Length: 348
Image (cartoon, rainbow, N blue to C red; front, top):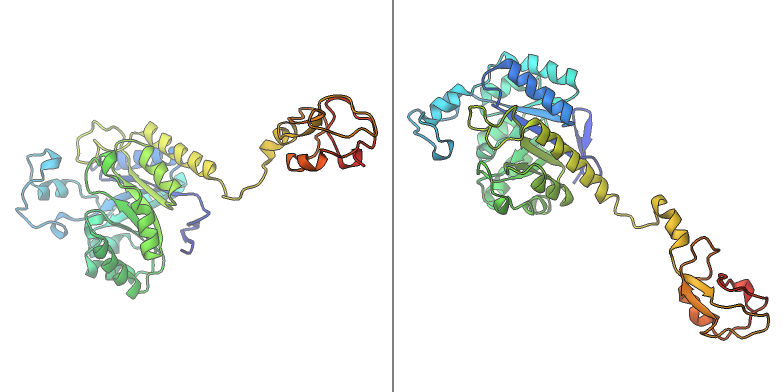
């Protein structure tokens, strides 16, 4: 699984987790809200802010009926139509993100929207419901950008088909994201271990697109399992009107998530087992060694009553415990005082 970059930000094994604040359509059609979401993401320390770019007529059939989970009397077509992000926002949001020090991203749901985004996004994010849209995957593959693809509501063999399509079109920079298409997703259903499954099964980088309500449990678990990317919805206020606000993180929760991810990375460390600098004092004072329990005169034979394996504290450390049997029965070559660390030079 090779590392690669989104913009000038390398990510992959050994690199910090790439954190995407999913603004989606939580701007509610207001450009100032969209910019405020960018501010929230930047302040929290996210790497990118991702919106969604679509047109209802390219996404749903008309008279498509309602979706129960949204608890909205309007048809899904009407809801989606009301959530459309104006194309003219794209350059302005891109520039605003750049000024705030985060990457601008947006998920395209159709070729027309992808064309509007192509000059402004460093990578494509493919939504779960689009991941089996093979013609669209071929279209995105032709633009020579990295692809981050969610896999919600798809079986593993369907993911395989989509990966095959992308690879056949020359995509080598690919990340697969575990995702559960349930809003919100119960913690018991998020199945974070799929992050490992995707990496092992397909030999690509993997990550998590998380819709649970908790800001830290699933993201930090995914990082511990090797996730290179974490995506989580964000809102200015979860009580705002709109289908994605209720399960999105508020600003303080996003900051909590980013901090938890960075702390998890720090806790994971390098995997190399060695004595660390922070252990130096106790390495000297608390590791046990062979010390005398009484005064020993030169020429005396050392017995079990004369030495014990103890922590030295501020005293000079004696021989390691593994040499205890070698010390017993030896003759002291010089006078030893009680509590002294026994050295090889002290023995004949």
